[in-house]
Length: 92
Image (cartoon, rainbow, N blue to C red; front, top):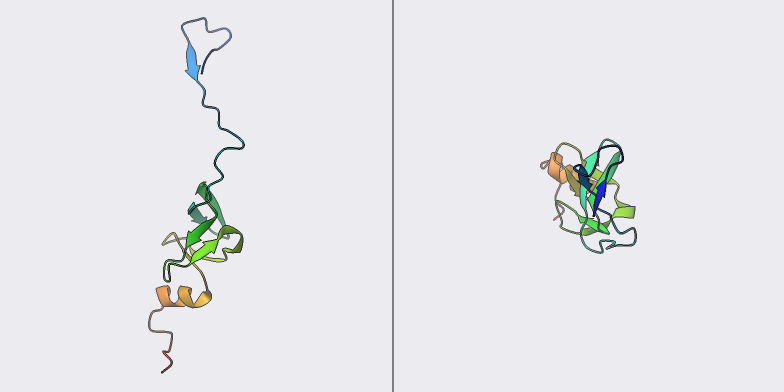
């Protein structure tokens, strides 16, 4: 849509993109920016994937992530595995 801005005359127009409030809710994988103590959804979706196990993590259950690496983890042991690979003992 093009709108003329009042006071600028007919030569000035700007483009306006209207987003559908009830548009696609993103039932797939979300793109997320991981922040300190919070995260921001960049692209809509219902889940992210664990960087270690590739398990789907629903956004409302997301608790563990790395700000530096910008990746999510499903469980605390995945965090340890990524950041301290030799720290976990294997059971045998």
